[in-house]
Length: 437
Image 1: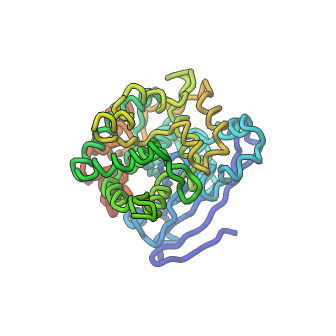
Image 2 (image 1 turned 90 degrees about the vertical axis):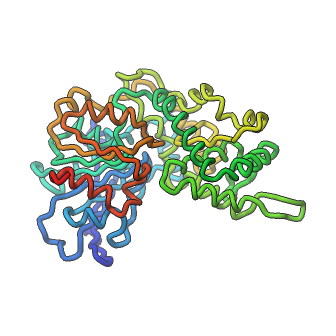
Image 3 (image 1 turned 120 degrees about the vertical axis):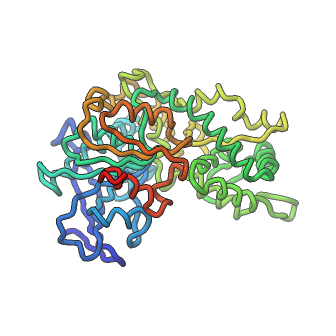
């Protein structure tokens, strides 16, 4: 029996579904997928259209709502919302350092995780749609970031299940390899660094001081992780969000205390750093990230730790050289490196598994350009100007390649605009869908 919970202004209903691990073998091993239905209080029995929300990631569970918070407030005016924990996340047969060893060897774990990409997520969603709406029922789709990537896969594999699609910050390059993605990303991240240092010029020296200290002696984080210079640079992941520059500045404000032997990195700083760098809550974000760009028709070879390989083309991200030259140290962005599986306790047991995935070849295609070129599903997408996480050039090229897709390009918000705009971004897309804009 489904669990029903009432919160101020909303009614929440839990749903659990059994789906095949491998959709090519529908009667084979089954895994559990969880989703939470959200409807406005008083509309529980109303005939509302469904809106499936696909979370960013990969590896991120759906948000846990508290009433009509964030974009849900706007969505619940028109829809019955389904928040999906994509397979391997949240309550959907989680895949973590604690659970994956039960699969056996690293090779067995890698084979298992090869079924956790967007194509499998979409096929899960289709099984769920038919159970909730019937074979002929169609629902609307809202995809944020990686959820937008999944939306393009949905439009490629099962457009008949969709009545409309809304995308925020998630139009992927249809023909971009992992190396292409990172080659375009490093310059964008450098621009975000420049903007941060222009906003907080005092941080140039503050960052150099911490980096110099870590070069001499990496620090231990409270959870047992290791803070190296490269790990410190990875804090730049936040710079693509609306308040990321401010968060980074405030973190640096608390970097030092005077201990018995002199200045040392403070517990406050180290705890804050750990909260930003640990993948304990979403290890698949690191383990599977590069695989989301693998497509046999684009690049039949492995993704091969592309962020690490391409980094050598951008020597300005060499922290030691920056310190030697008296230059600002640059933070990195949404890049995932082999060393992360050594410094983060949540990832250490998965190092060999991640390496096997990085060296896997012949990933199936995720997008069907010919199907997208003939698309008949209304699609409306917000594209954020100079988005740090998803290349704007790629996004606009994809918009041109999907028949009937309309874009709204804005610099009012960063990549997390859906979450922080109090429903304004979603309202704009719904307005476009309803012909008001």
